[in-house]
Each structure stands twice: as structure tokens, then as C-alpha cells.
Length: 95
Image (cartoon, rainbow, N blue to C red; front, side, top):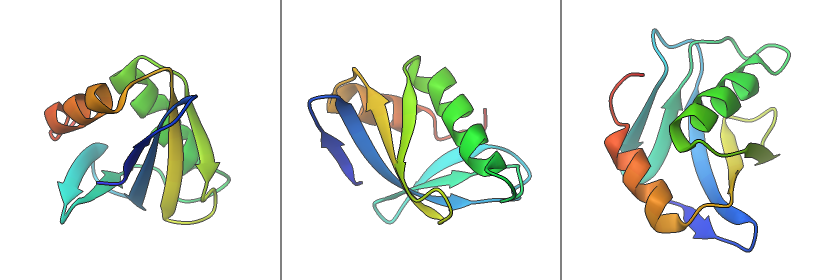
């Protein structure tokens, strides 16, 4: 998994699969895959990811790069890498 601790928090590199039946997070071949229910139109997928990860981590989530790509880098503010990894592993079921 591409999780890096920084001064601001933790960055995650994720791969997004839009138009899924349900929102879920999976770890496949050492990559974080986020299945979104929204279509990739007008930033709907990005909003869904930020909202759902905000609920999961109870922290502020920012999109650092990849706003129009399926490959995205997200920042989880004020959190440690070990906490993020633990919550990601626990969340590998539908929300």
C-alpha cells in the first residue's frame, strides 16, 4: 500500500473504480482500490471519496492530485500511518 506519513498527516495513493453498485474499499495486490457509486462527472466521484473517507477516518480529507484521473493521492490530516492502515484493513467491507 502506498501510505506515507507527512507533517500534515498521511497521504494515500488510491485507484478509483466509478459506477460500482456500492461504495467499498478493497486492498488488491498491495493497492488501495475504492469502488464508488457515482459517475465520473463534475467531480461527483471526488466528492463521494472525500465524504466517505471523512466518515471512516473522522478527519479532514483533501484531494492532493488526480482530480480527473482514476489514480488519486489523498491527504488525511492529523493522523498517523498506523491508524490509517488499521482503519483501512477494518473497512474492507461495504459501508
